[in-house]
Length: 130
Image (cartoon, rainbow, N blue to C red; front, side):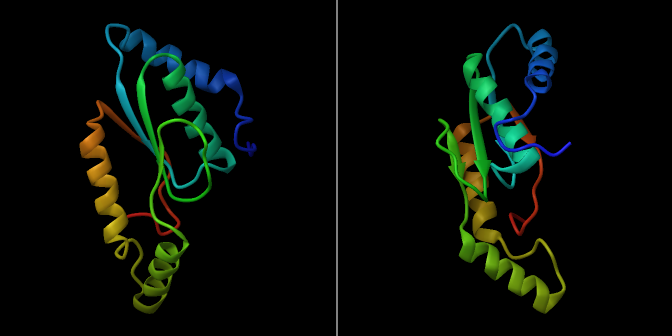
């Protein structure tokens, strides 16, 4: 089901949080989410979950590579140049996922600083990380 970012059916995120709220009702969590984009179905869903986590009192961090976000606690890693270099080196060598060392280190440092209880990886592609 393709949807535009922000138009994810509310019942999906509601069901997600109903399941987790039963398991985690004792305390609020630090949730880190990683997705390639803020757009399209996966980006919209991941961003909806991030917003819902913030709205329900959890600490949430959303890390992404492609797109834009004005939502609180989102961090964009990399840029077009990073993606192009990764793509070029992948085409030259035939290896995919080997040329994003700096972005990968940035994500790791960001995660270490945030110190999440849960890391939720949605979709990682588009020359994102190693």
